[in-house]
Image 1 (cartoon, rainbow, N blue to C red):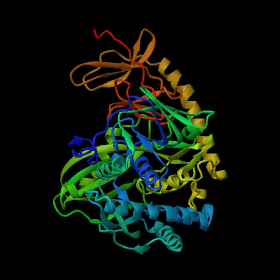
Image 2 (image 1 turned 45 degrees about the vertical axis):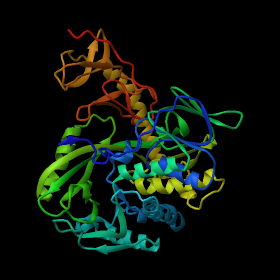
Image 3 (image 1 turned 180 degrees about the vertical axis):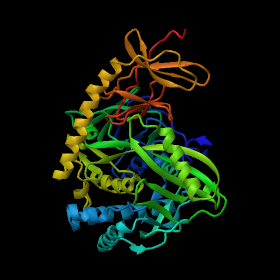
Image 4 (image 1 turned 90 degrees about the vertical axis):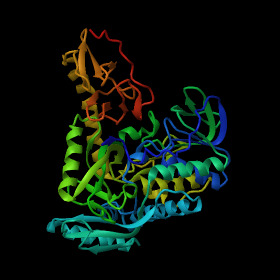
Length: 504
């Protein structure tokens, strides 16, 4: 079994250089996932001028490359809730945006001849609980009123009986890694500049009306900047305090017989999401489920094992080929933040997709593209990036940030009480005591010792060791680091300090 996403292993991805000298453009896009690349491409198509994309690692290797690869407006049981909470008009904005996102992915795939295996299929949210049937009936009624292709059915194509399912027809699934590669080729051919291995360290508006993006080796001056980095880097917009990070787990398996053709997700906990895996042949299946808030010191290894156990007990599994995890952020009111950031009309953001980023991110690119061209968009009111939300959302934000504050203070106290031994086994990591100071250490498979400081460089919160993914994770805002302190996930922009240890 490979510990890697099936979407990040494609060998035919284009490569791009790092940025090594200052430049000026009309639009700078920070983040080279689906949202950033689609935004950049649409900006070029609408004639906004010169465009540059800055990606900290490789294109599409972040959350885009660790999704299920479902492109659907069927987001579980969401539309009845949105209608009740915001009214019909704003719920329709969310529905229209995401259904348009589904169609735009298909259109761009066809227009640019992107070989990403895009396949139309129904998407279903099902329940096995008779007590939940009414909720699904209400979801279908709400979705139909909003113009979505919804119906109530009593089969999901799975090897067990269900009570009912919300079915959306004519949705799609694809290979997100190959799709992003196709977008990058189209963007480069349009004359845009694309840079990999170029981490943005700071985005700052200047008095001359430009926005500067500072990297380790250069500065980009732009008229407008789009920050599409899953969560905006650093302190931009305070979105770190308005969202919560979580990780979910996935695997790719080959069954002994044909895999279900439908895309499904359980409305009952724990979440179990499935879709075909064409690269695995007609018997290939992707399964995603489980999860926890980032940095909560959960047994992530046990979560993979639980997911695999469910898969094997539900299907006749021949082999499990890949396993991976991904990260996303959820807002307090379950709707992404898209548009102008609170601090600047020239800095645009898209964040908080709540694990539905392939449709929401594509819709975000449409809205951001219009803003870059000097036009507002009719979907923007529901996604307003400056909103605080209703009373329920504000209450959730207060509770979340009280928890973060307790973690910030309590985490430092916990570390001062830690007194772990220095003699870590190979493959083991944890907190060790060095002359009265707590240090994060990991011994690799070859016996080498890696040690880092334990304070997140974003806002100073504690870090927890994630044994299954060999990473140091921040429970406050979701930053993650490898054993050498290199950033795996933001909003942090600076690595952890390394610590020299005598390995006696």
